[in-house]
Image (cartoon, rainbow, N blue to C red; front, side, top):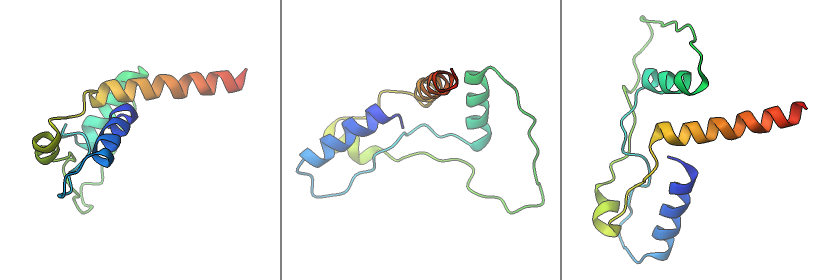
Length: 101
């Protein structure tokens, strides 16, 4: 979840009067491979991937169940994972570039 959505959602929840807890996160289901591909696309690079197929399998993907926050507050994050990562990548890139000279 991009920081702008996180802050907006946090402020909304803190200012609300809901008695039940709600999830705050992106409901976009993404696997590590998908995340890797998104970052490669943003950075304009391709990295070699290697897999340990004999290692234990973890969770196949992550996302937030936003049913309750939508029902309670009528709200959902508006910035996609790819857009948020692109903004973050651009900011980090600019900061590194500026620090080098």
